Image (cartoon, rainbow, N blue to C red):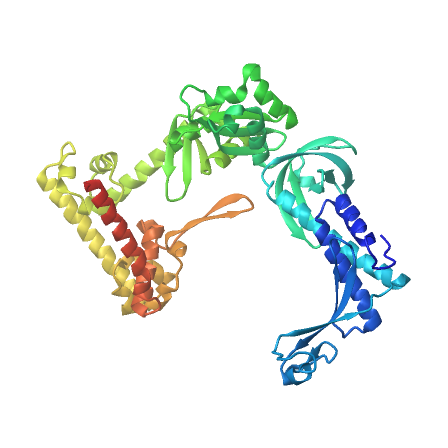
Length: 541
């Protein structure tokens, strides 16, 4: 694209040819030409001059102008491109700061070096425009499937020709040990599109769970039409996958629709995924039911939830344990990903052993603290009592409902439980004071003496110390390390302090210390009150 002069239609023809070839706006090419010609003109007239070039879009004629801008007297930095108001009066009748004086200068015939420089500028601008076009084209296609052809392979990464650009299928995004040859057709999921220094990068994937979801959308018209929805997907790429579906039409079976006639629909997806086995599971709003479905083909005896920990215990018959866990833990791992729950698998024998151990521990607790015989302690445990607080402060009618318990027995048990708790509270308070726990924290409402003793052992001895605690430090929580969920025990977790309770306690302490303005929390409370009142009015209406 050598430019020899700025004459007539040659520039327009060049711009249109480049724009057609690169599939960009011809005006962008002409603007690049104007910039390159202006740069070449500056090398002839002087780099300090503000030389501008305008190419007529109809005739192709290039006009060269020198521009000088009117500035304040003490703001002149470049005498070739700026002048004061006084100097501008020689050219303008009533000049003002910011006015421009435009003088036409003779066109420049570009020499070989200048022409080459101009060509480089044009190529750079065209390349940038091409990158912008490529980014704009693919950014809206993120999350969809695209067909391409293998172009080359670099260090295990496959470069895919996707039409007006290239995509990269990284080594860890390929299924198993997939190998491709140049020219092979390939179907991929557009995982991400990013701007980078070397241009827009289109990142492809064949292992992403959504790749399978999109394949089902292509094979199952009911999913494409929204009659059936894919609620969750979990994959072990190249080996096995689970997909949860729900139908919004009672006459359509979501599992059957995804399987297709003689398995034709699911088989098409399996073939694309290199033989990956797919379990299609009916989604259910009830988490326990959904989990039972997700663990298929294993049979489940019982499901126990731990809402605070986000864990769930599944009890299976002894002979079903290996099936529930799956080869190398695959079945339970996929079920966990599908349900977003941390699942523990127990056999009926293991659960029975644990329950017996808990029963024996609680029985021993009541025998020791209430000074009762084994039979009475077992009766309390069998009725669901788990700690002394429940015995001490429960409504007496619940104790009287136990066979063999009369009013005198109930009174005596509650009195013993309260005496023991008061004695323990007294010892804990003395221990806390001995450790240096200050009165400001002891008098803080919401903390029991036992809690104060635990806090003191951990170095939390003042109200200021308590106010700096995070809610999860007090109530406990879960963290994920290397893909495994790990339990973080909270200081006050064993006292039944939830995350919300801990947050309220810490915020109250901060307000008392003046660290937080209580009015900052008022708008949220006021909004909730307004919503409640509005809801009541609407209900009443």
